[in-house]
Image 1 (cartoon, rainbow, N blue to C red):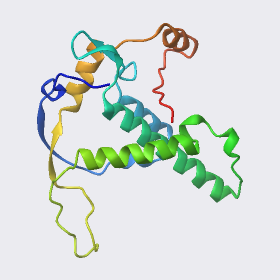
Image 2 (image 1 turned 180 degrees about the horizontal axis):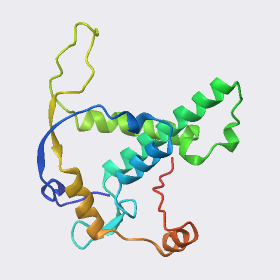
Image 3 (image 1 turned 45 degrees about the vertical axis):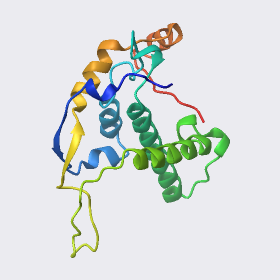
Length: 176
């Protein structure tokens, strides 16, 4: 969907220093909860009279959904490899299926190229490269974005019914 209005004026940006947070990379209930907390309550789908009259989401929520799917897929493969098990592609959940992961990898590649972060990272000679943490970036105010989106979130009738069946939890789905 092409949005005529420049949405970058709905939230502020601010300097932010990246700090390593291992939780988001782990295979754990705490990691799953941390990923869920990144999203607005109803997964970020919203309608807005001028910005998005049809039910829409910001691309960043799709990208995070994709990155989380790649994380889940990595740990599924890692666990199977460590246990010496074979994975049956037809029994994998859609979130970690090959078509979905391929879709996500290319989407994230294009997003990173489109929204190139030009923060300069100084090489750590002892480590032989850069680690990406400790440098100041210019970032969207995440809580502001989530707050704005939450104020305009919408659900379809089917999602409301599904949420009631599953204790209120909403899933963020995109297909390849």
